[in-house]
Image 1 (tube, rainbow, N blue to C red):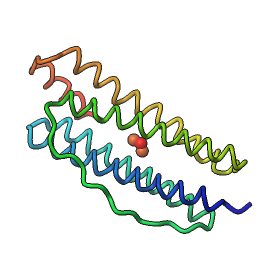
Image 2 (tube, rainbow, N blue to C red):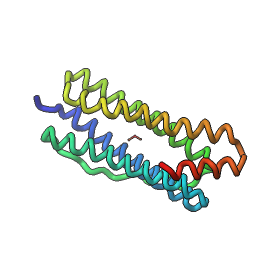
Image 3 (tube, rainbow, N blue to C red):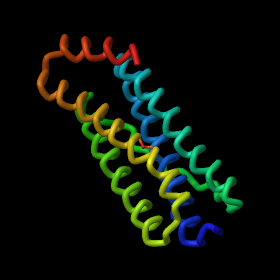
Image 4 (cartoon, protein in one colour):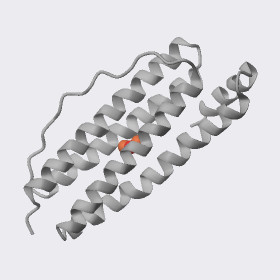
Length: 162
Ligand code: FEO
């Protein structure tokens, strides 16, 4: 069955969203590096790579379906933040936004009875649950620590292990 134009367009938009996400995390990594929080910088760099992989997954899927991939402009990400908590709160909110985008794609796939796309999207539904859990649990830790600098450095060392 041919993939619909609407679905191709929605997936191309999602490719942009994933690449925008990659850039947001790369900028967060650069922010942490400048703040001397190397563990958090490394965690965000890995997050950046994961987002590129997400974009590539969608690209491969469109190729598989014989559809045209549009490589988008990437939005310039924000460069400065108040502190580590501000960064992770932003990342958590961003992942919730991405989840809502994935759910809309699922809604469209269901509406179109596009079972192949529904099946491909299931991986992203599961992945988003993990992404929200990862960022959300770091937010909780940093909220608990508040302005305790030693605590923030401990979290930094922990995140270096990712
Ligand atoms: Fe590709 Fe973090 O969602």
